Length: 251
Image (cartoon, rainbow, N blue to C red; front, side, top):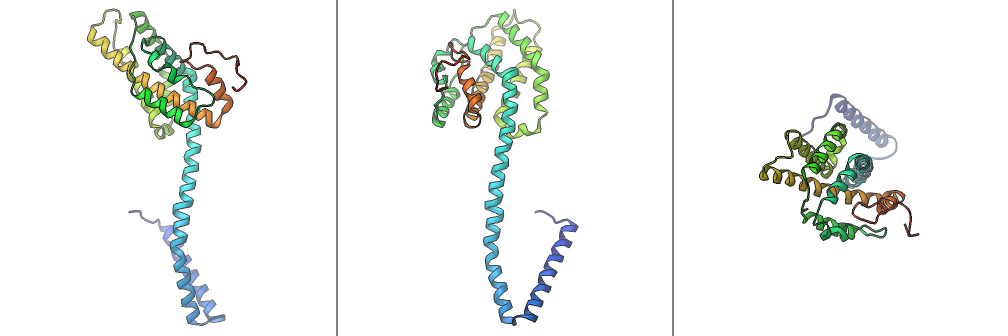
């Protein structure tokens, strides 16, 4: 239960007192007591409607507007992440996923995709698990890349607004965990099979989060930044024929 501050109590008493004085003057100068009682009851009858409009509808609309503005700011952070880390990491994993053909067609985003198309792609990703073909050199390359980007990722985590974007926060935590796993291993060329499988499992988690966040980001670009969406579609990391040069006037 909330508590009113002292100044709020004083202000409330002042306003109530002012209202009582005005009612008294109105009754004294213009009308009788019957009119005053009737007028008060009419205003009290309107009070629940006023509360409903001001506290539920207006507050809800303002909250939705603030949420939309916050999401746009958060997706700016996601865009920076994709530019610095996300796309390079996704391309690395895509290249070494031997089962990619199972989902590749579903990830070839087109300019005319609808909300349902994105939802279908998300459903496919949520039920997909990569199959990895990596040697020790690949693992070392991935380890070096993640360690190099760790400071950048830590700076992203300093943004308190990320708490509003749970999916992106989960992605960052999965990358941090994978980075920590790599940092604790001195030799990736002589791993027990069980330990290698553990690393691959952590990679699977990051891979799925990356794909899901990439789909969300693409949907955001389509809705709010068509010119950025056009370039993102043309440079789709899942498209082996991707090129930035425009081949289709619709893009």
